[in-house]
Length: 313
Image (cartoon, rainbow, N blue to C red; front, side, top):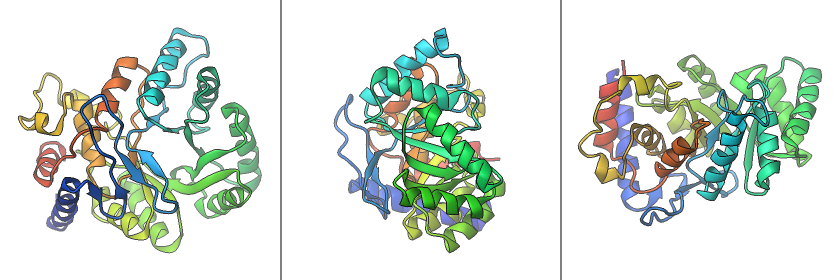
């Protein structure tokens, strides 16, 4: 990590650690109390509204692209039951994720979960006409007349599509608007957008082996009052290959961490700008494990920096 990046990272993590000890996250509102497990998930404020969101959400890319009625779908019914009964709310999907939005709509209807769900979906289009058609189809597949968050997918045609998303917000079709990306290549443009546009949310990758968002984008989002969704906290599963058969750090128990999945997720939510992290899984036991990352103490500055040193290239 470059010296400037390292100074920025240490500054951010030091703030996170100090505030975590007080039960607060700077610029993100209070964290809920963390009783002994099982207990409620920690929550963060959405700065533009003051709404509280649980810090563990659910992604759907890959894991939810299944046939309705298949054995995989039956497992997903159990996954979403565990998710919502465990206190989760935000479920992130996209018209680009194959059958995922159709499956999300079916799962929410099957379990009667719509009122508990915070649906985050996306526009991925290159024209107003295409966006309008896509939006109508997304609502049909999701079996709803509104979503909580509409995001411009991977900054695609973002000026035109963000304007359209704002129109839909004015019409009451979405509560929040935002933009997304998933690689370091998108960080400069995200920084530019944060400086020039008023957003409710951004979605970006942030992980132990890809922490560059902490250099500029995460602090800027915090300063601008923009909520942050973190994707790819497991680097699309690559991190698990790196820790196969490796023991957790000796201090893991102090943070209430009992698995590497929990460790990677807790790293993400330990940054004071992060609102929610969205790991994807189609397996009930993994969903249970992931929810545990949203309880107990956060990682302190030294713990976060140790992970960055260990995993960053």
